[in-house]
Image 1 (cartoon, each protein chain N blue to C red):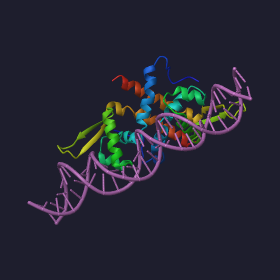
Image 2 (image 1 turned 120 degrees about the horizontal axis):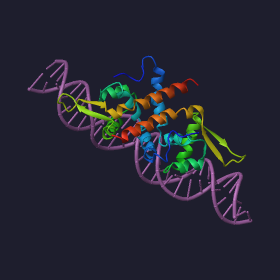
Image 3 (image 1 turned 45 degrees about the horizontal axis):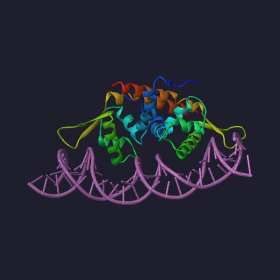
Image 4 (image 1 turned 90 degrees about the vertical axis):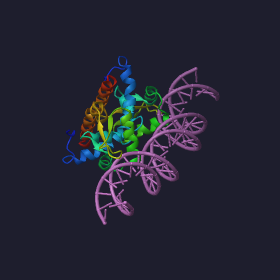
Length: 111
Length: 111
DNA sequence: ATAACAAACTTACTAATGGTAAGTTAAATT
DNA sequence: AATTTAACTTACCATTAGTAAGTTTGTTAT
């Protein structure tokens, strides 16, 4: 069986695969990104779209995503309290990953 | 912006997306699957291919993957001590997800 | 044949992360 | 002026992960 790619020739990519999957696989991170795929959202909108997540973890994950450059945070209307989160271009590029996971989930359900 | 798919029409898929990404996103799970993409491997081969993982967690993750039907465990040579782990068809089907993550990682590195 | 070694766990313990709930702060609403 | 709301923040307990030593059965060397 062949590998998806050659680790000898792409050590940088190989060494980063683990980091990437561990990052986007952190608890709640995947579904937060998925939620933002349908457009920018405010804090409470994300919270309401994801049953089970707590304010604390949502704050933490959003901060991590901002830090990693996958989303941006915008303060609305000169108010310190209204914010909006939006995927960056590289964050939005995760759509292909999400589609692949969706397809796999569907395939698995049909076994 | 359009969604990758319509949750109204595919509630089953929608509700399972989170489960899927949380499962394959569990610590070490992604890289274990990736490691097995290049063919069946014995316990110590997987351990050696994944720097940092401990015997305890590797055992735990492999058992979870067997339980979820993504890999199979084969005892070699009528011996109780030599085992081999291999991706099932549905486990191997995660290759598309892995390729998507690889592509995204590459794209991100070029920013 | 016996002793040392190895593979694949298993157990015990500590550290890190996640979950729950209450508290905070500034702005918007009544 | 008092109440409510958004978006955190803090404190505390539960769950999960990391580290290291121990176990069991089979294999290899003497």
